[in-house]
Image (tube, rainbow, N blue to C red; front, side, top):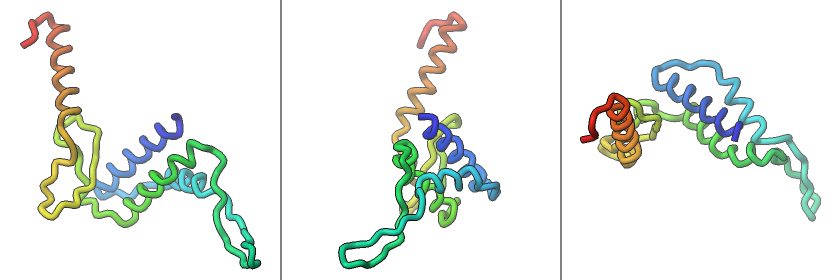
Length: 133
């Protein structure tokens, strides 16, 4: 769980910086990539041929997060950040990669952000002593 939260923070920082045209230091992300790939390993098959592979890390969390780390690295290296969009609500934390032909996709259902916004408004009114509307 700690590794997943750290990766989330690195992802958010890297994507936001790239979206605003900044490059930044990739060291934290590189550490995730290094632990995901594991150590180089030589393997011999039954015919005696040798292959160089990577032995996966023993850390299950890092192994499970590996494909996400690789996808983020690929986005940072090859992605078109003009197509990286944030959800419509101003406080939305969700980002998506817009690949539709018209580039007008909203990304996802607005329900989670809208519900969060409505619940926050309700709690604010309740705290102020106003009747809910």
